[in-house]
Length: 635
Image (cartoon, rainbow, N blue to C red; front, side):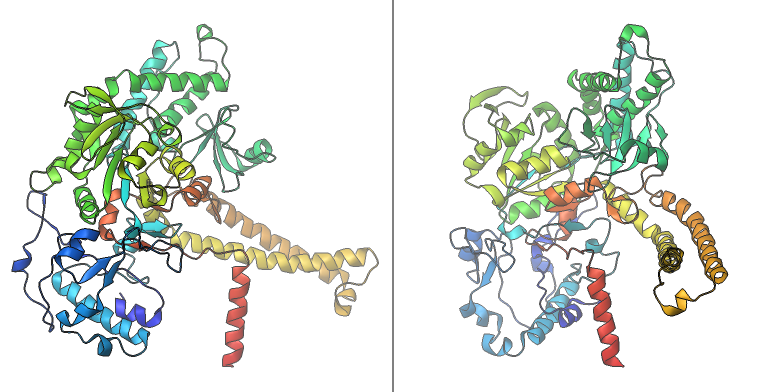
């Protein structure tokens, strides 16, 4: 692994935020986070430094207690060279440098590339002696947190220092359910309701591998499809039977998936959609084979979809499912001990933390106590983390319009009307604008984190211009599947490149043959005078080679991504080269995305996320020309 200083030596223009001392928490033998006693940490380094208060980094406390740093306030902030707000940036007061035993003029003299490299070496050495993981280099080991399945990936540059409030969804965001357990029980209740409605469900079982997030239900045809970023269908399934490439072309060759046509298309936005899609596709099979009794009434695929949604909705509304989960949460929730520490760091960095969930108060309180309280230090409860809690939020309407707001005043969930939220309160309903007005924080000062691409991410950005983060747990599995598929994909690409080369050669010979057949000269005099049998033989050989390459390519292309899902391939890709429709939605609406909230722990609350360079079709041409020029210059 390269050190930070080595990277700075190569990429001196790239600035990275060093890990925060606020991250120096530890876990005791009981799995509870505790803070270290800094007085017991041995002194390191040659420099003599004064004692600084490290307990807070809010704009008021840092300046008042240490008077060494100042924090850029909202009223004095500007924008940096990437257009991001400088609010929350920490600034050194030059007159206090001597307190560290540093002569600012001498230390900062010289080329900034050399100064940056030297200071990075010292800081990196200090962090290592303190036992704080160091990973600030872009070429770090693939096993480091920032280049791993648990990385945070940036589509639009985001300065966390400028964020004043962070809002969180609960289900599948702060709390990850075991999909087989939670969605399996939802499926069971759905099927029981369908049975009571007269549908044949005997012999059916929950199969979570049948679908993945990001697929689209075609309610007119009873199909489930995977589309690329443009809306072209690449794979499709009718009922539980995958359709051939030819059938997909015949059915969808002249139409695009358009999610604005809600009467036809239903996008699987979240893991909550898994049970619904599995039940629907299985019932399509029953409808096709004539098993659905006449007493249910005449049904088409749209009507069948409505029946499945109604049955699943009843499973959620009638309360049996949630009552079962609340009685034994340990069977349904996957614990994450790192999560409370990530939120504690954010809170202590001066962020207002919000919980905004569609779940009701009793369910929220029970599940949050189970998931958080045992991992919090000093007898803290989950509510101590959040400045405002909103239950029964009715997203996406919460972001779109106003609804009455009620304050939850008892542990049993009794409520009274109110018009403004106060710090520490729990509320039901209301709207995002009420939250903004209560906190006096608006627009891009708020980051909202959720798992639903439409309800959480799209609508908060479209209507309020909040910054957004998407949680997608499947990223961890996909990342590992991509690593394991690397050799397969490289071999496949080699075959495709060979086919392209052979194809280009064949096309030139074919063009020559065509021109000669029309009595016109071929591309060159030699080609015009070439023996006809020699030309034909060359073309025949090339055709046979391409056919044999196709026999290799076709099954390998079909198998690409099967390590993630044997039917649908990778979550983020549609075919070998292109992005999936889901990935297009993520790039459009989510500023950052990651597999779980606790991944923030590895980045500090002060991280400056920078989006990566986006490649274009003609970038390969410019790269080739650059390499060609370099080769000529060296020869």
